[in-house]
Image (cartoon, rainbow, N blue to C red; front, side, top):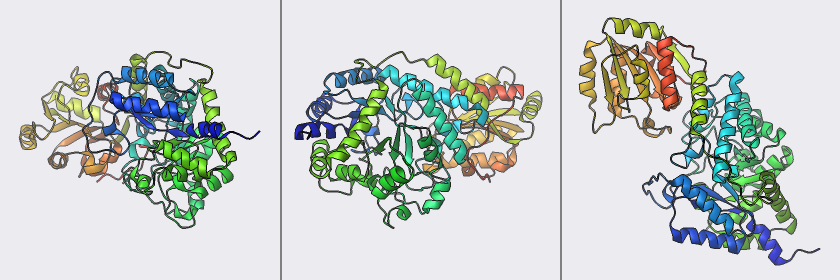
Length: 537
């Protein structure tokens, strides 16, 4: 039976997942409702606010934080579902939990932190996936655009880094699958990204187009390995990255998102994947600036092989282009894949999806277990013994960088190692010259570095004077340094190899600070390993 033009149009609408924003105006919300009703769109992708979306895409607007964002998203989802002709698949990028997008919600460790766990503690990665899944479910979200399957083998990567499980392909694959299994077990769809692998790039694809120079053989050997494992384990979806791989694309620098040879020939035909393929956000500058005619980008992304057009900005025009140019068979294929995902999460038969409550206590217990297993000792000349010896001789001082002295790390230490405390919080309120002078009379300095940013830009936002202070102290004092942040910060610190003790603690969460403090007090084991190769000076 031939499908009517209207029935076909209703199916094409399902491919579109425009962005929506928790902190949006009533006018914007009503515009989204019109899109849903008029075009039968398949789903939505939630962001916090227009200022924080994929490319900060309207301007450099300041992100305004709201304590009621979680209640807002729940109410918005219910409102959008109410006006939808077909139940919407609600998606969000929640790699380290809802906290990636929503204030006052549980936050779990970054992937690089999980990557420091021993292989035999992979059940903790499963638990992270499961807990994130339960948090999403409580809000009414069905689909997490996570985790990364990218192997982070380029320390200068401006956008992947801390979001990857590391540079060992087996571990990346194993941990990504555990995270997916955790979500799947509570009924949440997952997604491996960014195919064919965004780890070995030095360009941020939100802003420009990274180009991978590897051959197909090299990619099959490394970058593609976690995706192949995901395909073998029936991953729900794979996200295509905005990156060019000329060797797979007749020598052309075309983004994978728009490349038939990468999606159809490699992913579908060669690797045998028949699950849902979703584009990376189509507002990202690496692709959004390519086509002047509205709807052209959406057509090109669909034509290349994507089933879901994420952050599509031209919905009516995109639908028309696809209707004009796509075969009914191809439309049917993509439609069926989306339908299958909707059936899996139960939204076609179930009116209400939001179940359960956020469990902050469970998140804290899980974060404590992870902290206890991922602390990584890099330099150890008996840190505990040295700290207690210096304390006994009144030669111990503590220095906190980028947090005040009321931090949980110092508070934990003070039960047995109370000593003079100093802090550099920011360049407006703190002075490194006076701190250096105050520390002159002490032999041993116990330093906590709370790395200001997770991304490597501008030395992780560490002030030049702090780098100079650290360098001086490392050369003139016995320094025991605990780093709460991205381990890629380590090469930024000159003379770090001169430290008496160096422990990588990864996150600045309360739980990680307390565990790090206890590790010193009790001379506890550090069971973690650095998930990436790092040269310290």
